[in-house]
Image 1 (cartoon, rainbow, N blue to C red):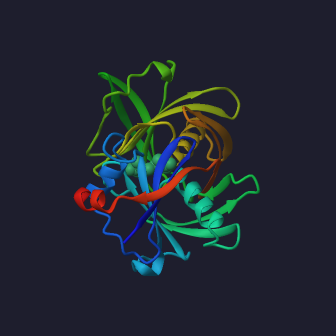
Image 2: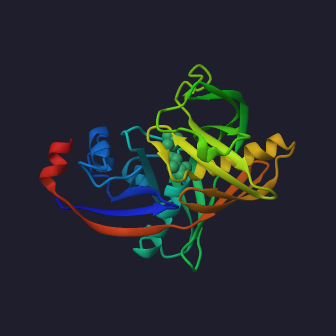
Image 3: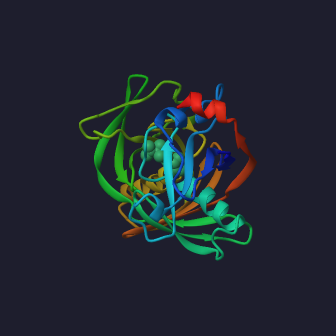
Length: 273
Ligand SMILES: N[C@@H](CCC[C@H](N)C(=O)O)C(=O)O
């Protein structure tokens, strides 16, 4: 069986997209890790399997389910940048005839709009403040706001330039507070309605963007300012996204790009399993 793939990214958070409408692929953690490996595979921060919701018996309001996996093979509830890439794929291939529709994810249904310039807005659901904790980078403590955007985040707004932080090694965090792991964001406010952010993603490492992370960052910054409603541009190493947060809802708008498409070598796929 030929296995098609596409390579795409959202603000340089990059993904291997695997079209699998009928849910036939045996997508093991080993295969995901091999696909995402930048030396022995295609290289990516994660895998987006495009599967019909009914084909895998998962509850979803939309016809299509985004089966997202992190580069280490672990499963995550949600991926904001991936949802934009996923939405553009469905529209450009004609699998979805309209530009406003719903994508199923493990965090729930996510309505999307694919704009004429092919940027995408995702309704990201609630960004819930769940407490406070600490991230430790290079032995230094950074207090943070815990935010759940379907997946867990800890956002530290820091005084020093985030470009100076050494994120080559995993920051530490309180695993009692985050028993399933956490995505760690470090943020500099850049004035009115603008933030700069770096992220160390659960299951991946430092990435050039994280959509759920940018929503968490804006929600945390608003929370620290004593409010729960607002909007902000967020500059990440891979570009810029726009985020709105209100009570019980949030949106993420940004680009979605495709780089390549091809077929996996079936022998490589077998060995990778
Ligand atoms: N890059 C994604 C988030 C992917 C999942 C995350 N690493 C997790 O484990 O929760 C995004 O754009 O939101």
